[in-house]
Length: 333
Image (cartoon, rainbow, N blue to C red):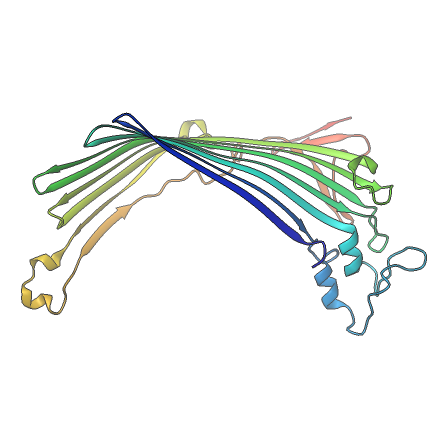
């Protein structure tokens, strides 16, 4: 489709170094830049939707009438070629993903690992819709800037030991996960200047700001015991705390237990001609998760609005701003 494109460029670097006898570190970073321009979707603005519904014998050219208005075969729909030339949805993203890992091996049986990673991106979305008397809209521009930051840190200690025919592997660790999302949305309606795709060319402005912050802290352990590669026992446990939960129930435990043995080792050679390998495994596990979004258990204020037959209208309205929560409305002149 014309004016519909996607471009992406990426860059990746990884560096590994050994420092002395006990230290080994790795740093890597991935950067990507993408831009896409998407055609609108939906019943009133989607060009493909309208194209499928128009008469097969209709000639879409010329796009405009002699007076400059949109030439269409019906009202309440933008025509496909007009939509391509007058409505755009541009999205630009710059993203960084750095990861640093440090391994310390003070003994042959002990490894200490510190791993810090992040996911950072900045996104700019600009939706432009020129005035269209065909569907009764005066034009609008939405300009959204989003900043996203996510950090993930793990500190782990792992051991691996052999005691005769027994092998024991143990891992304990701590995880800290935090996430921040902030967005600024500026909307301008009633575009007054042709081919000027800037929100300052609108007759009415409105703006909104959003931010969300969450953090999760976890402690975990895992143990695997194996005898002669024949019988094994695996235990896992985790204790997590999440900022999105209520203060008296922020932490929750979960884990698993599993055991297995290779019964074919007990069978004679005659039976192995029929079944050369057989293994029985039993396990039980519980799962824990916070399962709710940030501030879902609170009553934050959000910008108020109302659904009507003419559409959804958000405050401010007639010079008044309004916010609502689950408990009450607040209106400010």
